[in-house]
Amino acid sequence: MKAAEVGTPKRTKEIIAKYGFSFKKSLGQNFLIDQNILHNIVAAAELDKSKGALEIGPGIGALTQQLAEEAGTVTAVEIDQRLIPILRDVLAEQPHVEVIHGDVLKLDLKQLFQEQFSKVERVSVVANLPYYVTTPILMKLLEERLPLENIVVMIQKEVAQRMAAKPGGKEYGSLSVAVQYYCEPKLVCIVPHTVFIPQPNVDSAVIKLTLRDTPAVEVPDEDHYFRIVQGSFTQRRKTLANNLTSLVGKENREALTELLTASGIDPTRRGETLSLEEFAVISRAFLAKGWG
Image 1 (cartoon, one colour):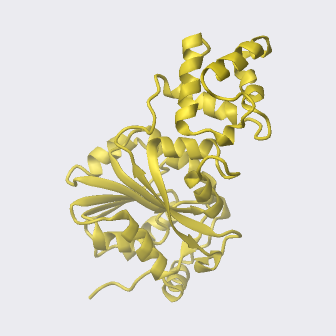
Image 2 (image 1 turned 120 degrees about the vertical axis):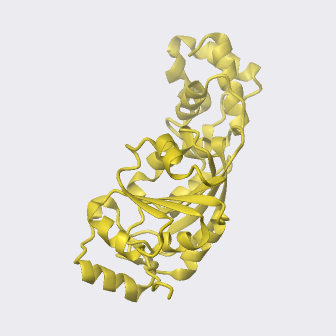
């Protein structure tokens, strides 16, 4: 007999009452209680029994339960010790699900992948991420060059829109560039705040990040590239020339203007109008000039 689905208002309230669980605001705990959205998240990950799924912050296992139906191996990392016995109870009939107590920001993820996913062909991260650590978690997953097929996560709607934004709009910024350097983003659906217990103050969105085989642009020094990107958005209302002067010094302001112009980039443009390739052009020009 199939276990009762966790991701419903009735079942969630029953589990909370059974274990006397109290939500910790500091951990950003909001449990999803909508089966349709859970199905949409799992469907977007395109899992099958030859693939693995890493879930971060499984809560009481609503999404974990759905992942276990589709994936060959599921590993769920939960930071809250109080949830571990609940998860092991809820997932008792799923031997291919491993629950790990830990902080994903402190774990050696390469080692975790070797230990947990050696028997599957591909791995996806599928999670309902706490708002307060969304960006650090995603950037760790991307920067560590893990063998991931895609990342499907539910995050704050505004953050998802920023990740998927194209040049020229107010949502486009350094986060857009960083994510799109590694991935192709696609918004899957908007999730109203009313489908959670407790309800957060803002709506969420599910975003799918398909990992690129190679970064979107070729740069000789990634750290330098991202310094240029960050520098270009220091003050959004300022021009490129003004923002990037802080990287080269006021004494090089005129040389900076000449370098941008010679690179085919108008110094009076703002960072939000530049493509990933144009940031790469600037980075290469800086390095050729000896501006680290």
